[in-house]
Length: 404
Image (cartoon, rainbow, N blue to C red; front, side, top):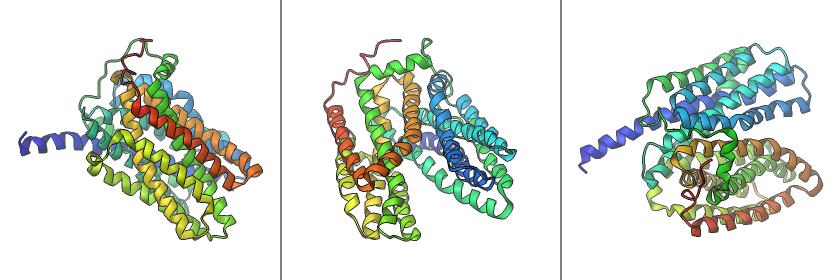
């Protein structure tokens, strides 16, 4: 292939991917900003801690309950319509918050914005997977798309906090509504080749989507994904407590979190350019082994810089393995049902994000933070087994999937 043809092919893929990342950045930044602003406003209105917990859980509960149906819809309609729906849900959520005079309206706003961001991620990840048939390039696509939540999670709260301090909550919600509106514009104006139409399975439904879990390889990928989510949740939940027990200042604890975020964002930016150097099938196994070791030693670290180093290593591991899991997920199901597989993953993630912090709180009271890290290390050993089985599994999982 000539250099001119290669350059043309690169631009053909690069422009849609940039559009997909920009679209998801707008959706996720809106959700991240709302996730920060709504609890703050609710506290000013005198809401209880229980109400704040319910409010935060609404960001995850609503997308968990509706993800399967949207996955089926995405497989039927491709990229544009689902992306527009996701953006409009987020806009409605921002406007509901703007006019919120009660906690119930805040619950609705949180649910709409969380659902919009979750729906957008399903549509966008499915679209990214269909830009190329190459396994190596597909990993690059997933790595680039994974930048969107990290960037949105950084940009949304910063902008929201500044606007709240200067102009108040109502102005912040109006600003946040602009971000998904830009996503609607991108979804309507940018052509994402090959994904605005689809060839759906006419028998697909939310209930039949769960039939995909009959595929052994998909179940193993979901297990690996849930373990990553569980370890990430525990890391975020326990670090402030562990730092407080060690006598760290708030600045030192913030630096430990920043080390994770910075390392994760950096490795996701680098991975698309070095993907060809990785043996993709071994990455989940290596990641699980490293996580077992990391969580085993985490409670033994007593210096802030050591915990910053451990947090950065954790960020690198998560930043590498998440795009790899997306690649394995794609390879575990028929291409025309990938949206449903993404919906199953999203549903499991949102359910975990809702339930796990409550469990960690209960276990933390009775066993202490250090014990929680060691228990997670034991659970991650199950991920090592699942990763080994994925490496040596029979490659006929997709072909053996019976039609629903």
